[in-house]
Amino acid sequence: MTDEQLLQRITTDPAVMVGKPVIQGTRLTVDYILNLLAHGATYDEILNEYHGLTIADIQACLLFATKSLRLDTHNQ
Image (cartoon, rainbow, N blue to C red):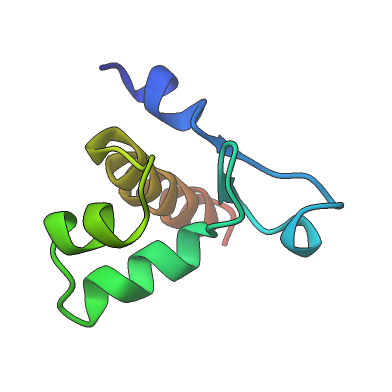
């Protein structure tokens, strides 16, 4: 899957979670998924807890964060 395809899984909408980036079709924010991973949750644990999520959704969160950090770095 290309970067563009992964990033299409992440959306922002002011009416959903106050405009925070979320996994499309859910109310799961990118930062929530990243926090789960940071605290040791495995992909399998996350997928078992949130039915309907895919590995690509988790990868999209990681890619979104990576791209966001790069943009922040280049804007400083």
